[in-house]
Image (cartoon, rainbow, N blue to C red; front, side):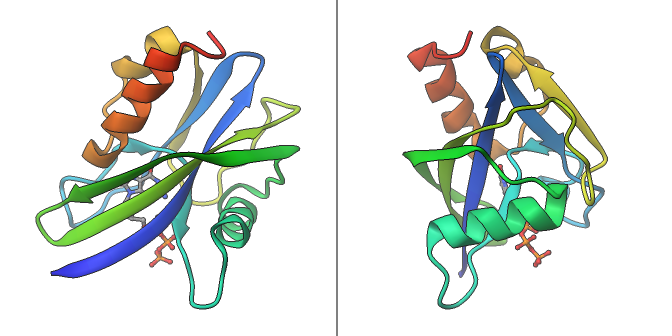
Length: 135
Ligand SMILES: Nc1nc2c([nH]c(=O)n2[C@H]2C[C@H](O)[C@@H](COP(=O)(O)OP(=O)(O)OP(=O)(O)O)O2)c(=O)[nH]1
C-alpha cells in the first residue's frame, strides 16, 4: 500500500483556527473536505522546511511562530496510508490568501466540528478541543 507523509499547520489568530477546503478530487473521501493547510514532505526536507514551503505555495503565508509537533496521525485511506504531522502556528492577520483551496473559515474551537473534515483530521480536531486552548 502506498504511503504518504505530510505536514499540516494549525494556524491561530485571536483564538480562532484557520480551516481550508480542498478542491474537488477524484478520491471522494478527500474531495471538498476541510483540512489544515500543508502537503507532502519532499526528499531531503525537514518537517519544518516542508511546512514553510507549503504555506508559501498554498497561502503566500509566513507564520510568526511554529510550535513543536502537536500531533502525528496515521490514517488508512482506501488508496494510501497517510502519516500527518501537525504543528500549531501563529498569524498576525485574518487576511490569508488562498492559492489552491476553494474556501476557508476562521473558527473557534467550539465550532470546529461543524465542518466536513477529511477523516485523518478528526483526531487533530478532537485533541484541539480537548486541550481547550485558544477558545
Ligand atoms: N495538507 C493536508 N493534507 C491532508 C490533510 N488531511 C488529509 O487527509 N490530507 C491528505 C490529502 C492528500 O491526500 C494528502 C496531502 O496531499 P496534498 O495534495 O495536499 O499535498 P501536496 O500539495 O504536496 O501534493 P501534490 O499535489 O503536490 O502532489 O494528505 C490535512 O489536514 N492537510
